[in-house]
Image (cartoon, rainbow, N blue to C red; front, side, top):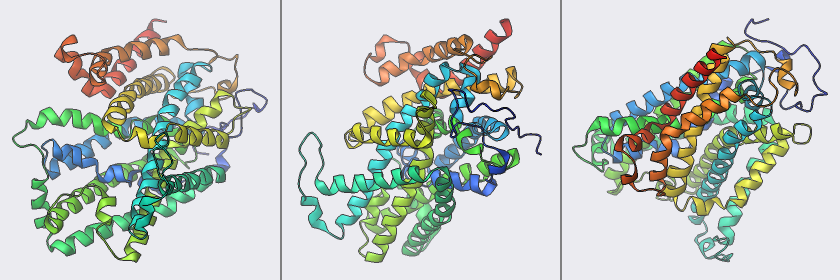
Length: 486
């Protein structure tokens, strides 16, 4: 047996903290190799936000290769906590909520895992709306009259066709949840090569239309919205944003690596799948958008808008399928697994993974994501990205506790014992967590408009641009110091 894999020897199925979904995965069921792990990342990384990821960096003044370099560095940085947190999943076969019992206590893990899960519920609703809206926009090319379908009133804010496309895509997501974790593995494995092919086809289309890749890249310099900017002034906030793009997954990556054959499989799978796909698809976004300047006389960053320029029914059909699969594969892996496990951790004997997934789906509807995304600057780029500061703090404590304090040694059975060594709340973790977020609160209050910029010093406001790094480092060091003094 691989020395990096530990199997539960005791029967803890009677524990109120146990259910089949949260239980350590037995060795016999750890069937994911490095290509399965890589496919998970391809499926998550190939999506509309990744395609458009470089747009904000270029708009601020970066050129195409500077934007790609920033994206690459951000993903290499986040790959470190990703692989470190993945280790516990592969070694002990446990998901994030059970892992959090180690550092935050059995009861404290409920709150800690919900901090990760609830933000995913918000993103689930938003991504589901994006998927449904893409289907709607492309269907309008075939049936334009759908734009005049029955209006459902200002409270709902949609017409029947929009609501129907949203619910259709929502049901596809919920059906995957119903089929269980193995269906997610199959979805990601089969969708990965198809999505990469779609990307290649877009790039080849742009290349053939323009006739020269060199000419396309030269046109990319016209995309920049700012000239003569200080590169370093936009580089560090941009780098932080790139890290924050997958900061959530760096916490709950054990939810997937618990099914991996070995540590080598989980590490190499992530190295192969994450940074390469992010850079490749971002490059496609830059190249194709640059080509649209030459072809249509304007920069078209949104792939749905670009596909609307085509009039071939076959192209539209394949595009709809590609966009649906791309958004679905991202949504399921990134925004369903984490909250489903988090909800199950509240009452394991009453809430299963599937029930947690259904709760995620319900929340995804009742938050009216189409209204939230109507003000992306206010909700996504202020509130949700600010939320990632909390996740940086969690990651710092988890990694410090697992590697420096526990030396990767865990009493696996005790994680399911409400009166064992991990019982209740772990005060050092919560002290470190609370203090670590204090430095970024002033910048957050200014960002959301609660306070004016004159209220705090420029240093404190600028610190918010590095929120994930600040909370990660401070929580890591504080937790280590507190544990050393105990």
